[in-house]
Image 1 (cartoon, helix red, strand yellow):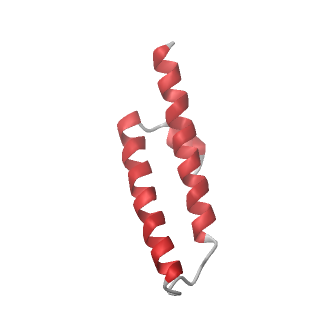
Image 2 (cartoon, rainbow, N blue to C red):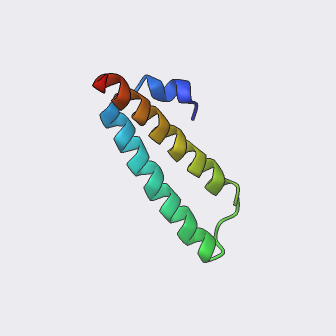
Length: 66
């Protein structure tokens, strides 16, 4: 997911997206631990997506405050 796409979303949508990504990361970690994960590169990609969401959320919150 691109940061430009995330900037079009509202803060509530970003929070929901972050929650969904965290759930998905949990499931990937569980599948990885049980050796059922085929593509291990999906975990770092998902972590970067979570970081992007948090960054854009922080930008939007700061923009609203000041």
